[in-house]
Image 1 (tube, rainbow, N blue to C red):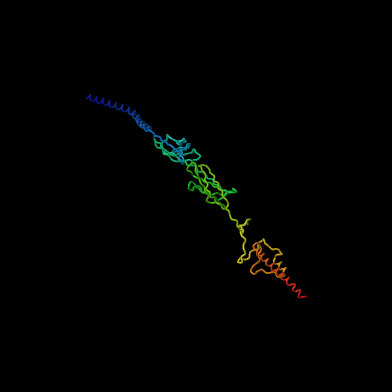
Image 2 (cartoon, rainbow, N blue to C red):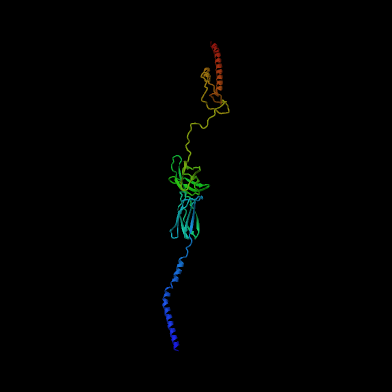
Length: 340
């Protein structure tokens, strides 16, 4: 019995010693427990970043020609610069090493005096790929300068209206102001263009120009067009006499003949007047008889066309007068013998 008690006491002592040893090791185990949590945080920080992307830019004009020297700026979503550069001789620019996301692309210079910069645009960069962009830089407008002036004095003319067009289409209408000038911008699709201009309205008091003018326009440059107008011609209401007659009288080819059915003719300036001795009046005076009257219904005519008639009448009168004188002389002796 005493042996059992002794063995029970020894077992108790051994259990107590085991419990004491277990309590002594407990704080050490508690202090080492955070280490597994530290290893899991390190694994999260080592997650690989997404693959970078890029943007490839090609710059052209409306005619399809490459534009070298065009400058671009790429901004991220926070407005910070993410890339920049200029296009090469082929009009190309590559921006690489960009984190995926949305960017803002700005063209700061076209590299040409004939072209304008393109509008800003958004660009999406995806992981592991390159975004292709084609930028079209428009041509700068061509300026048309219209001048209207008087064709003789060069005075500026207000109110001249001109249509300007390309091909068969009118693309611009200009009207001059008080200074006789007007300007307008013309959009072109090529580096040079043949432009026509035609006047559709003239200033007050002037004739419109009927000629169609052509000129060569260039993007970004000013082209001048000068238009001249002449004053409107008005008829003079006061007639002015002319030195030369309007109708030239025709010269008669033959001597007109006397016609009783026609009326009296005007006396010509050149008359063939017979001498005083051969005139009917002188013959009548010699004979002592009254002057014979011209036949009824006719008028005396003078001039070259009446000369034959006058000569015939004068000869008849001379004959009658001579006969009267002879008869008178024959009767005079008979009267004398009777008286004796």
